[in-house]
Length: 152
Image (cartoon, rainbow, N blue to C red; front, side):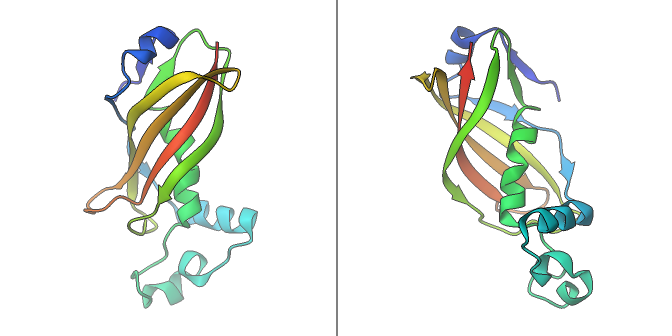
């Protein structure tokens, strides 16, 4: 999948209200989950104990919800890029939900819908709905409205 490239803020503005595309699939590994547990101190057995989790409610270990959310920047920048900006920074998230678990070994990808682009934050504030799909599951692993500031 090719990254959709916009030639500046004005070009990006024309895409408000549209779906920008999907990232490539990414495999969630036990190593990622373990490293996230180490970084956050969240060592709950449903994430880090494959033997116990095998007989648990999910049939194996699952990614932390916040690990799934933390994949959003990597996945989103595989969907689109904006030329002619000095930088883009995360500004926050609204309405974050985790509708279904993401099992270790699952493939996830992000779909991105550009909701708004307005002046603010020393540049332009972008609002996008990011849906992290899990291959073979009817419900996404995460849906979030994410906010970024793009500085020309």
